Image (tube, rainbow, N blue to C red; front, top):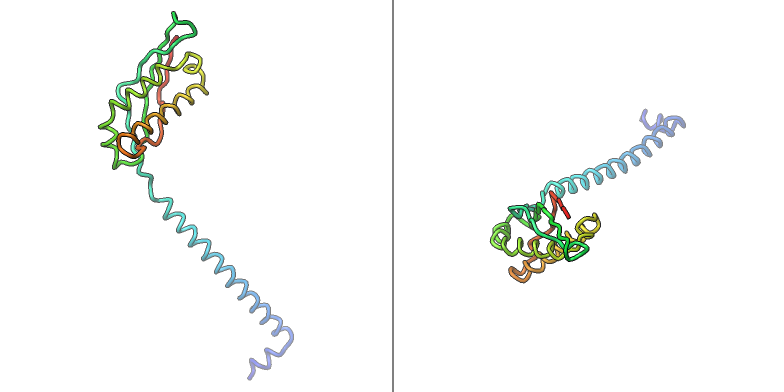
Length: 159
C-alpha cells in the first residue's frame, strides 16, 4: 500500500515512466546488440574457412624467344610462372598435365611481339592469354578449368 501511495506522487510517477522507457530502450539496444554480435559471429565463422588453393610452379623457368620489330632482331624472355590451382584435391591432375601446361605457356610467349613483352599492359595481356589457354586445355582434358590464375614471379627480357 505504501508503494501505491508513492507511485501516485508526481515525481515518483515520472521516474517510473522514465525507468519504463529506459527499459524499453535498453531492451531494444540489447536486441540490436545481440543481432549485431550474432551476425558478426556468423561472418567470422564463414571467414575462418580458408580457401583450398594450391600453387604449382612451372619448373624450370620459361625461357623463349620473341619476335623483334624486324625479322633480323630476336629477343628472349625468361619468366618464372606459378599457377594457382582451384583445389589441393586436383593438384595431382595439374601435375600430370605439366608438359601441356609448359608447352602452352612457351608457345604463347613465342608468338608475342617485342612491344607487348616489354610493356606492363602487354605483360598483363600475355598473362590473361596464358590463363585462358591453360583453362581451355584443362577443360578439354579433364572437364574442369583447374587453373584459377597465372602469376609471374620473375619476368626478365632482353632484345
